[in-house]
Length: 108
Image 1: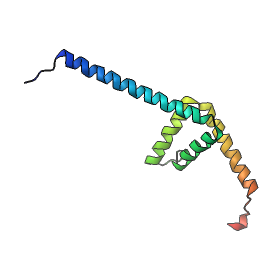
Image 2 (image 1 turned 30 degrees about the horizontal axis):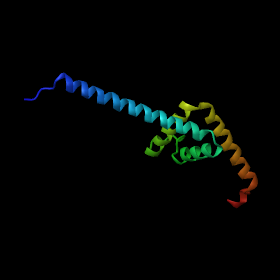
Image 3 (image 1 turned 180 degrees about the vertical axis):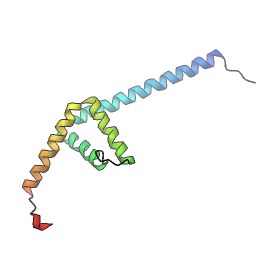
Image 4 (image 1 turned 90 degrees about the vertical axis):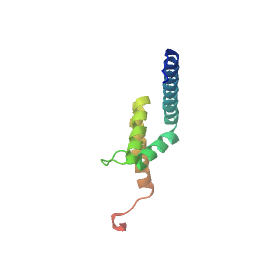
């Protein structure tokens, strides 16, 4: 019967540390990517559109909502103040579109 020696244990622990470090660095890169995208109005619109399509702010529990919540949580982690800016920009854009292309109540 094979026994696990202390060298194998140390190698396994070292591999685990490397995996954890790689995972940590990947996560930091993801958050930095989101932070950079949030700087641009186009980036904020894109992320808002993704969260809307994912039904992030509805009460249902779906896979796409979970993805939207993951994105929302990342935004709140890296730049919570920009989320409020995104809301204001979205509202302003919607109001501008309504003024530019008004629809009368009878048209429905």
